[in-house]
Length: 118
Image 1 (tube, rainbow, N blue to C red):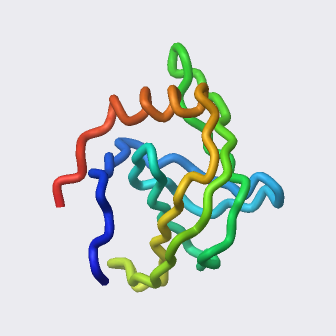
Image 2 (spheres, rainbow, N blue to C red):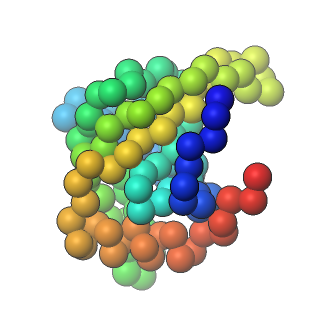
């Protein structure tokens, strides 16, 4: 796969759960993030080219959880194999709309994360 990223990703210290806000179904865990999008690791394939209304719980003031709702398009999904022979999927999402408040929450989340080094 050709590397098309132009912005370094930030790895999250704690993988945050992400849900389809419309259906309530879990999609997986966010493993990295930029202002352009997120990487998700999950047990089910996610259809590319589909736009989702997503819900992610992020640490808020005083580390209290807050919900972050946003729209994002799945750009790709690849099947991987874990060390435990369980089939898993990596997916890349591009934000399609972020409010200024959501962008600020993502900035705080990213400030707490190391840059991806691989």
